Amino acid sequence: MDALASIARDSALFLDAVRAAPPGARVPACPEWGVADLTYHLAEVQAFWGAVVGPAEGKGLDADDVAPLARPADDAALPTLAATATARLLAALAGRDPSEPCWSWHDAGRTVGWVARRQAHEALVHRVDAEQAAGRDVTGADPEVAADGVDEVLRVMLDGVPSWGTFTPDGSTVSVAVDGPGETPRSWGLAFGRLTGTGPESGTAYDLDSAQLVDLPGSTTTQVSGPAWGLDLWLWGRGERDGLAVHGDPALADRLRRVAAQETR
Image 1 (tube, one colour):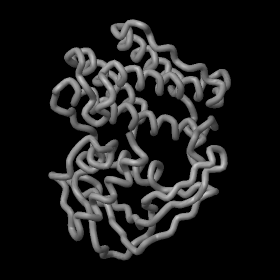
Image 2 (tube, one colour; image 1 turned 60 degrees about the horizontal axis):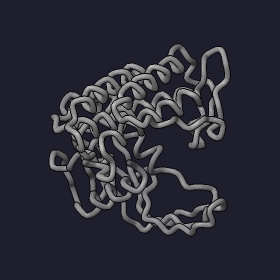
Image 3 (cartoon, helix red, strand yellow; image 1 turned 180 degrees about the vertical axis):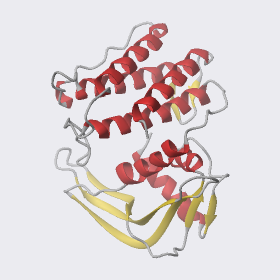
C-alpha cells in the first residue's frame, strides 16, 4: 500500500467534497459536526502528525510540544488551512525511512511508517464523511487499502489491553473475512469479553464490552465476510452491512460493530 499516495488522493477528494457541501450540512457519522467542524478536524490531525514526524533534517515533536492549530474566525478559510496541513504532512513523510522513530499514542506505533498508515486511513474515512455530507456517492477505495483499513481497525483500534486493565473472555467469538471478487482473502478472529480496570491518570473505572484478536479454529459460530471496502466502511460506521454476508448469529456481528464504535470516530 502506498500510504502517501492514499493521503494525497483522499485529502484532495475531501477538499473537493467539503467545498461542494451545502451550507449547514451535517456529517452523518458525526451528527454533532457540521462540514466546517469536519474540515478543521482533518486539518488539525494532519498538522499535528506533520509536526510529530518533523522535517527530514530535524527532529519531530512529542505530543505535548505540538502547538494547537488555530481555527480561523472565518469558516471560508478552512479549506485552505486543510490543504496547507495536507501539504506539510506529505512533505514530512516524503522519503522517510518507515522504521524511523517518532512519538505515538500507540505502544506499537512509534515509527514514521505507522504514522503514514494511520493518516492514510484518517484521510480516507473523513473523505467518506465529506462526500456523505455533500450528498455525493461515496468514491470507492483500492481493495488493498480497504483491506489494510480493516486490519487497522481490528489490530490497532480494538485489539490490545492497557497495562492497568484486564480482559476476561466470555466465550463468544466472531471472525471477519475479506472475500470480495478478485481480492486477496484475509481473515481475523476475535474473542468477546469485558475490559475492566481503573485508569491510573484519570482514576476512571472501566467496565467495557471488548474484543481481542485471537487464533480461532477453522470454523467459528459467526463470520462476517465480504469485499474489503464494504467491511472497512461498516467497521468505521460509514456504511451498512447490507452488502456483507453473516454466517451464524447476526447479534454477534452487531456486537462487533458496537465494540468498534467505542474505539472509532
